Image (cartoon, rainbow, N blue to C red; front, side):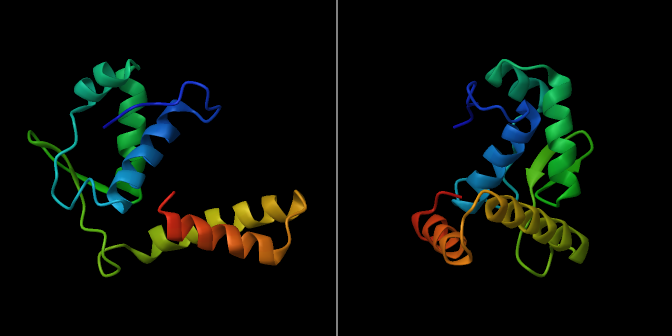
Length: 125
């Protein structure tokens, strides 16, 4: 269920963030599901607990996780009503940066739109 791509150049904490977000989008992880503790996830992935802690903090900031003291970390409800405008704005800004990068790489507007639609349809998020 949880694994890293050791050939991926993205920082490990970002891979953990994306891995959990993808599982939420795919419906594998649902609201109020508990995720492994920082220590458990670190052992499972073979990484430093500080790396997992950083990923979990990022997931909390983006309102994907919430923590209950003494209980652990859980998947947050991610309906449009619960995600703050700040989190939405941050996600839109990331999308803008990605689009600019793709335009610089030579992709046309139509190619970018088609790629986004393909990703959405295929569930490759």
